[in-house]
Figure (cartoon, rainbow, N blue to C red):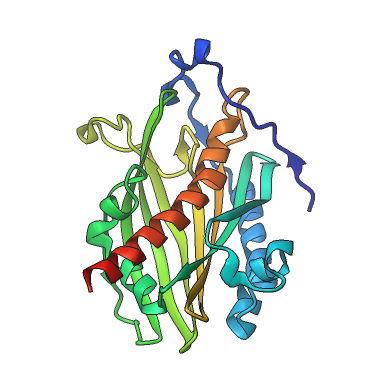
Length: 272
């Protein structure tokens, strides 16, 4: 399976004020496109996620900055794994990692399950969230279904999605933990400023966020924890001038996720 490289760029200020999500035509997520995306996710599970579950090895372990000690990585390191087009859509996958001195696995677990405060923790990206613990949960595999309203407001456009996720928080050992989350549905609001206008049908909208898979890998390391965040998202084929969206929902978003997590973990210790 080969992917062509996406053209990524920013809108010019002269045209930015004229462009909103509504300018784009409504598009349908074809099943073949979704299947290709799911194949990409399955490949990531096999080659990256599953080996971590078994060994605790992270992507950051292979980077030149961290060959001696991952504990030195106290600011986010983010790289593209895939940021390009497939037939009928585009995949944006970025990995990010950092070390949080003084942090613990329980801190991250607390932050991830604190759905009521997601709008504060991930300020600017989410407007609200709620999570429901599922009946098949166990102490080592906490299973949630989460409903999250994702918002993006820039000088170019405003858009909001009501997304439902299936999420597992898994404790593999005292020193190793992971969160895996995938989209059940992602529905765009007709008007991000007026929810009474309703939602587009799932898979039939402007196509800026059709699907998303998010992974958090956390392990104890010395005085704190190493964390890795992977964001894999599926969107429409990239229209000319809209490549910035793929970057916004990937590289910039992953870096912010890591920094938001660090801030939330640090806040726990400041309170104690």
